[in-house]
Length: 289
Ligand SMILES: C[S@@+](CC[C@H](N)C(=O)[O-])C[C@H]1O[C@@H](n2cnc3c(N)ncnc32)[C@H](O)[C@@H]1O
Image (cartoon, rainbow, N blue to C red; front, side, top):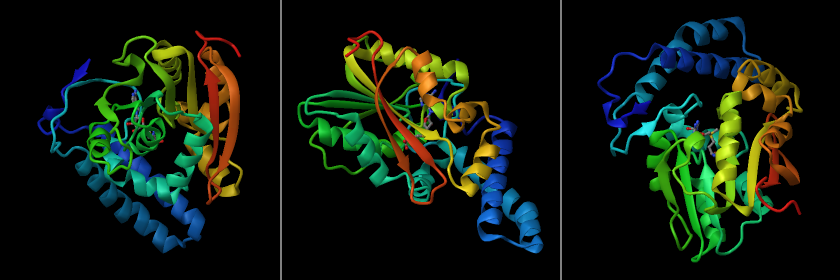
Protein backbone atom coordinates (compact mmCIF):
# COMPACT_ATOMS: atom_id res chain seq x y z
CA UNK A 1 0.00 0.00 0.00
CA UNK A 2 1.50 3.36 -1.00
CA UNK A 3 0.60 6.56 0.83
CA UNK A 4 1.51 9.60 -1.27
CA UNK A 5 2.34 12.20 1.38
CA UNK A 6 1.53 15.21 -0.82
CA UNK A 7 -2.11 14.16 -1.03
CA UNK A 8 -2.87 14.36 2.67
CA UNK A 9 -4.65 17.70 2.49
CA UNK A 10 -7.19 16.45 -0.07
CA UNK A 11 -8.69 13.38 1.60
CA UNK A 12 -11.80 13.25 3.80
CA UNK A 13 -11.68 13.33 7.60
CA UNK A 14 -9.64 10.70 9.35
CA UNK A 15 -11.91 9.82 12.30
CA UNK A 16 -9.57 7.22 13.71
CA UNK A 17 -6.77 9.80 13.96
CA UNK A 18 -9.15 12.28 15.58
CA UNK A 19 -10.14 9.58 18.10
CA UNK A 20 -6.49 8.84 18.85
CA UNK A 21 -5.76 12.55 19.36
CA UNK A 22 -8.66 12.69 21.83
CA UNK A 23 -7.39 9.61 23.69
CA UNK A 24 -3.89 11.11 23.99
CA UNK A 25 -5.39 14.34 25.35
CA UNK A 26 -7.43 12.33 27.86
CA UNK A 27 -4.29 10.49 28.91
CA UNK A 28 -2.40 13.77 29.36
CA UNK A 29 -5.33 15.09 31.40
CA UNK A 30 -5.29 11.92 33.55
CA UNK A 31 -1.57 12.37 34.25
CA UNK A 32 -2.15 16.04 35.14
CA UNK A 33 -5.01 15.07 37.49
CA UNK A 34 -2.82 12.47 39.21
CA UNK A 35 0.30 14.64 39.41
CA UNK A 36 -1.37 17.83 40.61
CA UNK A 37 -4.33 16.23 42.46
CA UNK A 38 -6.82 18.46 40.64
CA UNK A 39 -10.33 19.00 41.96
CA UNK A 40 -13.72 18.16 40.35
CA UNK A 41 -14.36 21.54 38.58
CA UNK A 42 -10.94 21.44 36.89
CA UNK A 43 -11.46 17.79 35.90
CA UNK A 44 -14.80 18.69 34.25
CA UNK A 45 -13.16 21.64 32.47
CA UNK A 46 -10.37 19.36 31.23
CA UNK A 47 -12.81 16.69 30.11
CA UNK A 48 -15.40 18.82 28.32
CA UNK A 49 -13.41 21.84 27.10
CA UNK A 50 -9.62 21.41 27.12
CA UNK A 51 -9.48 17.81 25.81
CA UNK A 52 -11.85 18.30 22.81
CA UNK A 53 -10.20 21.61 21.82
CA UNK A 54 -6.67 20.18 22.19
CA UNK A 55 -7.67 17.03 20.25
CA UNK A 56 -9.07 19.04 17.32
CA UNK A 57 -5.98 21.26 17.30
CA UNK A 58 -3.62 18.24 17.33
CA UNK A 59 -5.65 16.66 14.55
CA UNK A 60 -5.54 19.85 12.43
CA UNK A 61 -1.77 20.12 12.96
CA UNK A 62 -1.10 16.52 11.97
CA UNK A 63 -3.26 16.75 8.83
CA UNK A 64 -1.78 20.02 7.52
CA UNK A 65 -0.02 19.76 4.15
CA UNK A 66 3.75 19.30 4.22
CA UNK A 67 5.93 22.28 3.33
CA UNK A 68 8.47 19.95 1.69
CA UNK A 69 7.11 17.15 -0.50
CA UNK A 70 8.73 13.79 0.22
CA UNK A 71 8.73 10.59 -1.79
CA UNK A 72 5.78 8.27 -1.15
CA UNK A 73 6.26 5.92 1.80
CA UNK A 74 4.77 2.42 2.15
CA UNK A 75 1.98 2.31 4.77
CA UNK A 76 2.65 0.76 8.15
CA UNK A 77 0.62 -0.53 11.08
CA UNK A 78 3.23 1.06 13.36
CA UNK A 79 2.35 4.12 15.44
CA UNK A 80 3.80 6.94 13.38
CA UNK A 81 4.20 10.14 15.37
CA UNK A 82 3.71 12.65 12.59
CA UNK A 83 1.15 14.62 14.57
CA UNK A 84 3.51 15.28 17.47
CA UNK A 85 6.69 15.86 15.44
CA UNK A 86 6.94 19.65 16.11
CA UNK A 87 6.72 19.09 19.90
CA UNK A 88 8.46 15.71 20.07
CA UNK A 89 11.76 17.06 21.45
CA UNK A 90 9.99 19.05 24.14
CA UNK A 91 8.06 15.93 25.19
CA UNK A 92 11.32 13.91 25.35
CA UNK A 93 12.86 16.62 27.52
CA UNK A 94 9.85 16.62 29.88
CA UNK A 95 10.09 12.83 30.16
CA UNK A 96 13.85 12.97 30.89
CA UNK A 97 14.66 11.19 27.61
CA UNK A 98 16.45 13.90 25.66
CA UNK A 99 20.16 14.72 25.30
CA UNK A 100 21.64 13.01 28.39
CA UNK A 101 19.71 9.83 27.64
CA UNK A 102 20.86 9.78 24.03
CA UNK A 103 24.49 10.44 24.95
CA UNK A 104 24.27 7.48 27.34
CA UNK A 105 22.76 5.31 24.60
CA UNK A 106 25.56 6.23 22.18
CA UNK A 107 28.09 5.29 24.91
CA UNK A 108 26.37 1.90 25.35
CA UNK A 109 26.28 1.35 21.58
CA UNK A 110 30.08 1.44 21.26
CA UNK A 111 29.91 3.17 17.85
CA UNK A 112 33.45 3.71 16.53
CA UNK A 113 35.10 5.99 13.99
CA UNK A 114 34.28 4.76 10.48
CA UNK A 115 31.18 2.74 11.45
CA UNK A 116 28.17 2.58 9.17
CA UNK A 117 25.10 3.17 11.35
CA UNK A 118 21.36 2.95 10.71
CA UNK A 119 18.82 4.56 13.07
CA UNK A 120 15.44 2.82 12.55
CA UNK A 121 12.50 5.02 13.58
CA UNK A 122 14.90 7.97 13.93
CA UNK A 123 12.22 10.51 14.88
CA UNK A 124 13.64 14.04 14.78
CA UNK A 125 17.14 12.68 14.09
CA UNK A 126 18.94 13.79 17.27
CA UNK A 127 20.33 10.31 18.04
CA UNK A 128 21.51 9.89 14.43
CA UNK A 129 23.35 13.25 14.68
CA UNK A 130 25.16 12.08 17.83
CA UNK A 131 25.99 8.81 16.09
CA UNK A 132 27.37 10.76 13.10
CA UNK A 133 29.63 12.75 15.44
CA UNK A 134 30.97 9.45 16.84
CA UNK A 135 31.35 7.78 13.43
CA UNK A 136 33.43 10.74 12.21
CA UNK A 137 34.42 11.70 8.69
CA UNK A 138 34.94 8.12 7.56
CA UNK A 139 31.62 6.90 8.97
CA UNK A 140 28.17 6.95 7.41
CA UNK A 141 24.86 7.36 9.25
CA UNK A 142 21.34 6.94 7.87
CA UNK A 143 18.07 7.54 9.69
CA UNK A 144 14.69 6.27 8.53
CA UNK A 145 11.23 7.03 9.87
CA UNK A 146 7.67 6.44 8.63
CA UNK A 147 6.51 9.94 9.67
CA UNK A 148 7.15 12.63 6.99
CA UNK A 149 7.29 15.52 9.48
CA UNK A 150 9.86 13.68 11.62
CA UNK A 151 12.08 13.32 8.53
CA UNK A 152 11.58 16.94 7.56
CA UNK A 153 12.66 18.09 11.05
CA UNK A 154 15.58 15.62 11.07
CA UNK A 155 16.84 17.03 7.78
CA UNK A 156 16.88 20.53 9.28
CA UNK A 157 18.65 19.49 12.49
CA UNK A 158 21.70 21.65 13.36
CA UNK A 159 24.76 19.49 14.00
CA UNK A 160 28.43 19.34 14.92
CA UNK A 161 29.40 16.19 13.02
CA UNK A 162 31.62 16.47 9.93
CA UNK A 163 29.29 14.32 7.83
CA UNK A 164 25.52 14.90 7.97
CA UNK A 165 23.36 11.77 8.38
CA UNK A 166 21.06 10.90 5.48
CA UNK A 167 17.39 10.88 6.48
CA UNK A 168 14.83 8.91 4.46
CA UNK A 169 11.10 8.31 4.70
CA UNK A 170 10.87 4.51 4.96
CA UNK A 171 9.47 1.73 7.14
CA UNK A 172 11.43 -0.58 9.43
CA UNK A 173 9.61 -3.66 8.12
CA UNK A 174 10.99 -3.11 4.57
CA UNK A 175 14.33 -1.33 4.87
CA UNK A 176 15.54 0.22 1.59
CA UNK A 177 19.15 -0.95 2.09
CA UNK A 178 21.17 -3.87 0.76
CA UNK A 179 22.10 -6.89 2.92
CA UNK A 180 25.07 -6.57 5.30
CA UNK A 181 25.50 -2.81 4.88
CA UNK A 182 25.68 -1.55 8.52
CA UNK A 183 27.95 -2.13 11.52
CA UNK A 184 25.37 -0.86 14.00
CA UNK A 185 21.58 -0.59 13.87
CA UNK A 186 19.94 1.66 16.48
CA UNK A 187 16.28 1.25 17.42
CA UNK A 188 15.36 3.74 20.12
CA UNK A 189 11.71 3.30 21.17
CA UNK A 190 10.84 1.92 17.74
CA UNK A 191 9.79 -1.60 18.82
CA UNK A 192 7.17 -0.19 21.21
CA UNK A 193 5.66 1.68 18.25
CA UNK A 194 5.05 -1.60 16.37
CA UNK A 195 2.42 -4.33 16.79
CA UNK A 196 3.83 -7.71 17.96
CA UNK A 197 4.19 -9.30 14.48
CA UNK A 198 5.92 -6.20 13.04
CA UNK A 199 8.41 -6.14 15.94
CA UNK A 200 9.71 -9.48 14.63
CA UNK A 201 9.60 -8.34 10.99
CA UNK A 202 11.63 -5.22 11.89
CA UNK A 203 14.15 -7.33 13.82
CA UNK A 204 14.49 -9.63 10.80
CA UNK A 205 15.15 -6.60 8.60
CA UNK A 206 17.71 -5.27 11.09
CA UNK A 207 19.49 -8.61 11.00
CA UNK A 208 19.47 -8.60 7.18
CA UNK A 209 21.05 -5.14 6.81
CA UNK A 210 23.59 -5.74 9.60
CA UNK A 211 27.02 -7.07 8.72
CA UNK A 212 27.66 -10.54 10.19
CA UNK A 213 29.69 -9.01 13.05
CA UNK A 214 27.21 -6.10 13.45
CA UNK A 215 25.28 -5.06 16.55
CA UNK A 216 21.68 -4.05 17.24
CA UNK A 217 21.24 -1.41 19.94
CA UNK A 218 17.74 -1.15 21.37
CA UNK A 219 16.42 1.39 23.87
CA UNK A 220 12.98 0.54 25.20
CA UNK A 221 10.54 1.37 27.93
CA UNK A 222 10.92 -1.04 30.81
CA UNK A 223 8.85 -1.92 33.88
CA UNK A 224 7.93 1.37 35.64
CA UNK A 225 9.22 1.83 39.20
CA UNK A 226 7.28 4.78 40.64
CA UNK A 227 3.58 4.82 41.58
CA UNK A 228 2.72 7.37 38.86
CA UNK A 229 4.73 5.26 36.40
CA UNK A 230 2.78 2.13 37.37
CA UNK A 231 -0.59 3.89 36.96
CA UNK A 232 0.51 5.31 33.60
CA UNK A 233 1.97 1.91 32.66
CA UNK A 234 -1.33 0.16 33.45
CA UNK A 235 -3.12 2.56 31.08
CA UNK A 236 -0.50 2.42 28.32
CA UNK A 237 -0.29 -1.37 28.76
CA UNK A 238 -3.75 -1.59 27.17
CA UNK A 239 -1.94 -1.06 23.87
CA UNK A 240 -0.58 -4.31 22.40
CA UNK A 241 2.33 -2.34 20.96
CA UNK A 242 3.51 -1.18 24.40
CA UNK A 243 2.38 -4.01 26.68
CA UNK A 244 5.31 -6.42 26.34
CA UNK A 245 7.84 -3.62 26.96
CA UNK A 246 6.00 -2.23 29.99
CA UNK A 247 5.96 -5.79 31.37
CA UNK A 248 9.76 -5.93 30.95
CA UNK A 249 9.82 -8.41 28.06
CA UNK A 250 12.03 -6.48 25.57
CA UNK A 251 14.95 -8.92 25.95
CA UNK A 252 12.62 -11.85 25.19
CA UNK A 253 11.43 -10.11 22.01
CA UNK A 254 15.03 -9.54 20.91
CA UNK A 255 15.79 -13.20 21.51
CA UNK A 256 12.65 -14.26 19.58
CA UNK A 257 14.07 -12.16 16.73
CA UNK A 258 17.21 -14.32 17.01
CA UNK A 259 19.48 -11.64 18.50
CA UNK A 260 22.12 -12.69 21.00
CA UNK A 261 22.34 -10.46 24.12
CA UNK A 262 25.80 -8.88 24.63
CA UNK A 263 25.27 -6.26 27.32
CA UNK A 264 22.53 -4.06 28.77
CA UNK A 265 22.24 -0.93 30.88
CA UNK A 266 19.25 0.52 32.66
CA UNK A 267 18.31 4.19 32.53
CA UNK A 268 16.05 5.75 35.12
CA UNK A 269 14.77 9.09 33.89
CA UNK A 270 14.81 12.07 36.25
CA UNK A 271 11.04 12.10 36.79
CA UNK A 272 11.04 8.36 37.55
CA UNK A 273 8.09 7.50 35.30
CA UNK A 274 10.11 5.91 32.54
CA UNK A 275 12.65 3.20 33.20
CA UNK A 276 14.46 2.20 30.06
CA UNK A 277 16.50 -0.78 29.07
CA UNK A 278 19.35 -0.17 26.63
CA UNK A 279 20.32 -3.55 25.20
CA UNK A 280 23.11 -4.39 22.78
CA UNK A 281 22.75 -7.66 20.87
CA UNK A 282 24.82 -9.46 18.28
CA UNK A 283 23.47 -10.16 14.82
CA UNK A 284 22.18 -13.77 14.70
CA UNK A 285 23.90 -14.15 11.33
CA UNK A 286 27.27 -13.22 12.87
CA UNK A 287 29.85 -14.70 15.24
CA UNK A 288 28.50 -15.53 18.72
CA UNK A 289 31.39 -14.00 20.74
C1 LIG B 1 8.78 6.91 20.07
S1 LIG B 1 9.39 7.50 18.55
C2 LIG B 1 11.16 7.32 18.78
C3 LIG B 1 11.95 8.32 17.99
C4 LIG B 1 13.45 8.30 18.23
N1 LIG B 1 14.02 7.05 17.84
C5 LIG B 1 13.76 8.62 19.66
O1 LIG B 1 14.33 7.79 20.36
O2 LIG B 1 13.47 9.75 20.11
C6 LIG B 1 9.03 6.16 17.44
C7 LIG B 1 9.29 6.55 16.02
O3 LIG B 1 9.08 5.41 15.19
C8 LIG B 1 8.40 5.85 14.01
N2 LIG B 1 7.74 4.68 13.41
C9 LIG B 1 6.58 4.09 13.74
N3 LIG B 1 6.35 3.02 12.98
C10 LIG B 1 7.40 2.93 12.13
C11 LIG B 1 7.76 2.03 11.09
N4 LIG B 1 6.98 0.99 10.79
N5 LIG B 1 8.91 2.23 10.44
C12 LIG B 1 9.72 3.27 10.77
N6 LIG B 1 9.44 4.15 11.72
C13 LIG B 1 8.30 3.98 12.41
C14 LIG B 1 7.48 6.93 14.49
O4 LIG B 1 7.06 7.79 13.45
C15 LIG B 1 8.35 7.64 15.52
O5 LIG B 1 9.08 8.68 14.96
